[in-house]
Length: 455
Image (tube, rainbow, N blue to C red):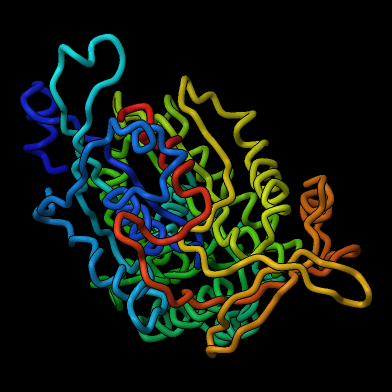
């Protein structure tokens, strides 16, 4: 929604708008979520848990022209063709902010339904990288704090040795741009390797997705050890860290984040469990930071930026539920909810609702029971990325989330009592029936939580 739309709605002169933010941690499936959500709102045959679709009060849905002339349009048609075409494959991931407007025609329910005609509600879906959202935590830190935190957690992450070798070879007593660029390149390589290994908290986020800022001074700094921070190199890096917050992070939240009404945060919880206890603890901390960012009434710069605007509902969705047999879905949901518990307990949401859910935006598997060592195991079958068919049992998630979260918080290096595997499935070939969107798991329940109260 552009500035003109904001003004018109504030004056009561336009149709109401819900601005839904969609972000996610690494490889959580933002593009697939948005594409499948839009397709299933256009063709609602698989949306039984969305009450307005089930009772017929949602009469029609259609795509509108992009409402904001300065934001790229989410390429829905191309992504849907990739997922559901004759040679299905995963679409490209999120690289920048994009947006799509879906208009919904609604017949009001209840006693006043006969007095009021049908109404139009616009759903503006804003897609942005989760790495950018994690940058919010930088705003309340200075360069010394950020440097120490990053260096403390870096020891167990890949690429650390290369970066530390680059630091050791650098003379901090003089600032040299070429040396600074070499350090930044080594640190960026470390961030990419950490993200690939399943770590969630990889800041600054724009180092991973620089776009037009690639090579700029705003992206040419790194954390430094204490003994290097009071040097010419340290002072310049501290200045650039401040510039990154002021000229990159703050404008993003001012222009996009501060105008969001509802929010989805997608997480690859299964991938973190497979990566081990440190990755699970890292994801838990990242989620706590994200929830703190959404806390209404938070003191400081964010409260000033948000003003009276409130994010009313936040869904934390553990994706890839189709990689598990349905009997394990409640356990995945419970683990996700437990990861949120600390942040939810300490935050005063002032009426904002949060929810945890296990979903699959695009279902890629079928369920079956396989025999292994004389035991029957609940498995899933799907098409692997190389085209082969395989049945897969990933291991049994614990009924008590503490069996994962406690050793993760205590710094365990590996799981003692479980071996949790993961497999990457390709979209399943298939023909969509008229009136049906792509197959999914609980996407209709996610939509009901996010927007059902407004339909």
